[in-house]
Length: 444
Image 1 (spheres, rainbow, N blue to C red):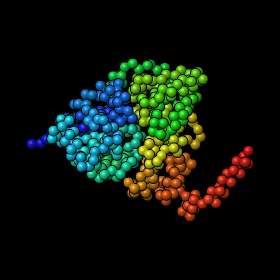
Image 2 (image 1 turned 180 degrees about the horizontal axis):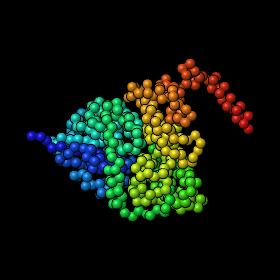
Image 3 (image 1 turned 120 degrees about the horizontal axis):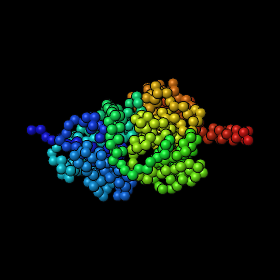
Image 4 (image 1 turned 90 degrees about the vertical axis):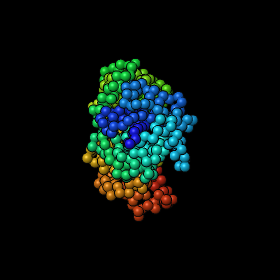
């Protein structure tokens, strides 16, 4: 007698929940006796931040699942991003969760995002032997796996589901385990977003030809200082105004401080433009559905790519070049999203030398960066990285690579081996400093 099958869909964002709903509508998953939505609230203070199932519009997604359960409740008082079971306790926690969620002796399949880190990794380890499916909640799947996965987890992944946010580009994530990528149809995603937008009320009506500015709260990730992020938002507004937009809508990150919007209000008064600060925590895609903006501006937000690929809206990026320089460590998983924004999207300020990277070389660029980020996980990508750097390393593309990184890996673009002593040579450094000082004096 065959056992029942329960599919557990793990989600931490409304965007991810919409992606899963679109995948279910497209019959990307086999039939199951029960489908549960497991909610992770990974915010810094989950007690004060609404979870996915409390967000405006979620009710339109609820019917795709037979029940909604909370991982935070299951492991309270621990934070889901910080808690992990000890190896010896895995059987104990599986029995506990099976009892808590009424799984009995069902066969379990798990659908996860961000499998490299907790809480997704913890759940995959607890349900030892359960088939895993991974789905992409954004652009990070185009980059390499950020940590070396235990083969007991990686070999259980059946496929990677993703939206075709960058047409023609195949995700690199989990390819070290030969995990195939599968596209979730964009038409299904748009249908789900339309239903979600219809369930959201009390959104302001935006003026015609508004420019929508997307805040990301990068200072919370220690990528920018709060002051630098405020200045970035101000630059977004100035750039939009220079393009002829007299109505500006700012969508702040749900956890961003109020002072960000106040800085924009001050700038809007100086420029004499109309500013609307959106206070309702909704997806940018809901705004695309409700009222089509004349321009969407951001740094490297995923919404820039959904606006362009799925809604055919004009988009522009700003601030990506200095951001790439500040991302630490080099293997920071935000690097590939930032590179894609910089390489694929037009520059808001129309500066010279900021032309988009040719589409035919984009895949090779991402492969080369993926190798330099994680050479131990993807050693087979070295020849492709060498080939790309030998042919395409230029003033436009060198911002995507660190010279020190290329040198340590012995790749084209690094310091030649015969000159590698120079950075550590005090005499050479002193000569360089004097030359720079002389050059500045001559310019004066």
